[in-house]
Length: 283
Ligand code: PXL
Image (spheres, rainbow, N blue to C red):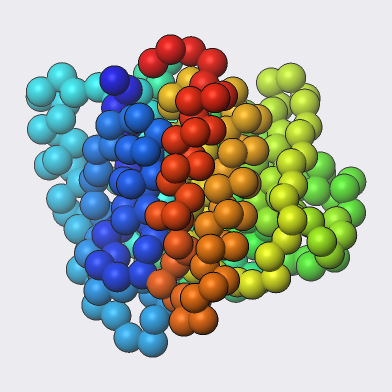
């Protein structure tokens, strides 16, 4: 069985980060190891939360992994809490990156034109450096704009998105998937660019006109699970769109859901089905 490790926070309540990555990647049939980078009572979207930084644990844990000769088929990073933490996580990637394993960096730090609480443009710059160590990055439009030092735009056309994708790949990751891209009101999806073949791909689902916390974490986790399981990246991103759409649809029935993340639990059977239908290698 393939084994990946994910480095991100544990937020006790409010599905995001590890509490999404673990069930979703496990459902794809991939062992999911975790290296928790912080412990929070909830994610930072709640009016009040605790935050215990675990940065000082990362190096002793990774040194121990090294002594044990531990290897990972994939490394997946998400929300990271400080500049120093991004730096240390970058070192972890350098230590455990191999020619045939896969590194996904989700620069989870902003959405809807705004940085999450506690982040500034220095952090966005640092995150853009971490993106340079990845095989694939999955920013949303806000994160992409901030990492490139551009103004966030709500109105754009296909040429603008393609230009953004090319510039993002110049950060150093050969493959880039930009989420939340919409050219007309009724659909939304992912725009993907593979700089190694100069190939673009766009996939959409119907748009659900709601903002829910944790959809980016769900999208990245489905992508990581499916890719590790042997799916082509374009197929994995398409499945991630469908599962995010379905989970949002289920969440709409719950009027208090916004900050508690999306009800992805109801979409797990659909995810397992998609993995079994679309995986290309027997793993
Ligand atoms: O969903 C991204 C995320 C993850 N972890 C924490 C967060 C957020 C977004 O606000 O606060 C702690």
